[in-house]
Image (cartoon, rainbow, N blue to C red; front, side, top):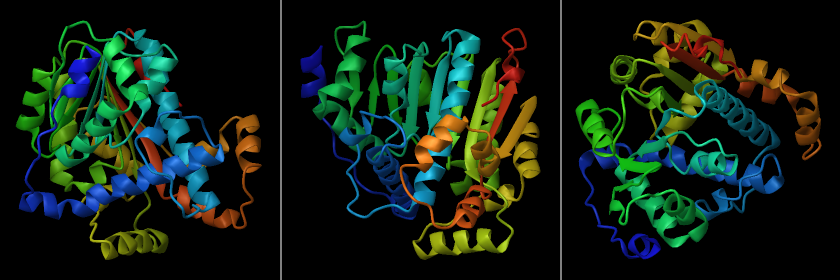
Amino acid sequence: MATSLRRASFTASSSSPTDTDDEGVRGTCEDASICKRFAVSVGYWQDPYIQHLVRLSKERKAPEINRGYFARVHGVSQLIKAFLRKTECNCQILNLGAGMDTTFWRLKDEDLLPSKYFEIDFPMIVTRKLHSIKLKPLLSKPILDLHSEDTLQMDGHMLDSTRYAIIGADLRDIPELEEKLKKCNMNTQLPTLLIAECVLVYMTPEQSTNLLKWAAKSFETAMFINYEQVNMDDRFGQIMIENLRRRQCDLAGVETCKSLESQKERLLSSGWESASAVDMMELYSRLPRAEVSRIESLEFLDEMELLEQLMQHYCLCWATKGGSELGLKEVTY
């Protein structure tokens, strides 16, 4: 089995005009991955896998950035684990725009893997991640150990195994996305958790609404986690938008990021039955005191006000549909 993964070929793909248009968005995947890698290196949280996917930045990241990523990783992780416990892991996870995320491997270490874990991202990003998986035994071995067939389904933009699949697809093209997921044995009857971290904001409101409606319609029992910007109408929000534009990265869906209410409303109007939202400063204020003391001792933070401004412009939202017998509506961070 291991040899079939090592010998699998990674076919080269040619660029299209859309690839060029999306270059700025792909760049944000690189930025986020490098920030997480740096925060892990300082000791904010443990992740033995990220070093095999992402280079360590020579440039120090500001303490407020590191604390922001800690809150993000903690909040998303708590919601994922709450869903897994409610479903007793008899479920599937779709990580939309997964980038270099390592959640699959960390869940396996905690014996919290769902029935199947799917990652979807741009084909170019998937090719790069597959290359690392192929070369690094720490990444490939857990996939192979859980695989029940003699051979793996794999090409340059896709790997499908018994418990893990990674798929190169455009989330704006729902028919293509659905077709590729079904080829990798997505089960619409299973309780399903969908995760999107700073993904929907790079789509137009129409495109993200289509994705949210498709998710609500496709699964009888489901939960959606969305982490992204909020309160973007004020001066600080405008500066964030301008900084990204200077890097050829447009927040095409920023109009849905006006407030926590607008974030919840977009979910409810797309077919989700319940929706909750909290800004990251609120989440940070509710972190266990021992954890806050630990991370605040790692680095001196000169300007608490800057941390507050930054965290007030990101939020964690989650929505549920069905699953009343599982208590999904009770899930919180």
